Amino acid sequence: MLSTVIAGRTVTHLDRGSFWRRFGRLEHESLEFKASANNLREVIPAMAMTVGGEIVLGVTDERRLAGCRLDQPTLDSIMRRAQDCGVEVSVEPLLVDGVPLTVVHVPRVTSRIVTTSDGRVLRRVGGDNRPLRGEQLLGLLRTHGSRRSHLTRRLVVALQRLA
Image (tube, rainbow, N blue to C red; front, side):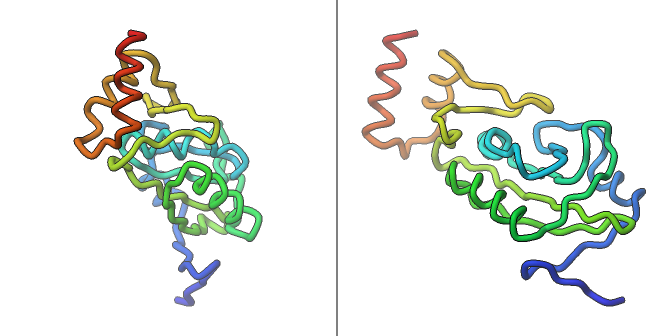
């Protein structure tokens, strides 16, 4: 079997059955399907703040394999969105019965609070990216480890006053 490499990464070849067995058809806290790399601003930080996970690019909401090749514009878009929130993602090119897909692997981040580029804190709830507000945000800040900076401690105090 000839091994294919794209952007320095070996392409994983799967048939459709193997693809659906690996990922399943339901989005959840650690799986998101996207048709393209255009709308990753919320899902990367939300996954990082929950359990981490995988974003499969090239799959429509109807679960049709539309394709999303790991080319330069796709890689740049992924890395730009990851850099916006400071999350170190990795990518995996897939070829499913000839249809190119791209998997973005998002790690769980526990050492700090990950926000969207506009400052929102999101978590995955099922297949949705949901904002944390009020007591939820305060609880996250309280439990996010003893390595809080002075600025974070001041934020907790300010939020306690508002709650």
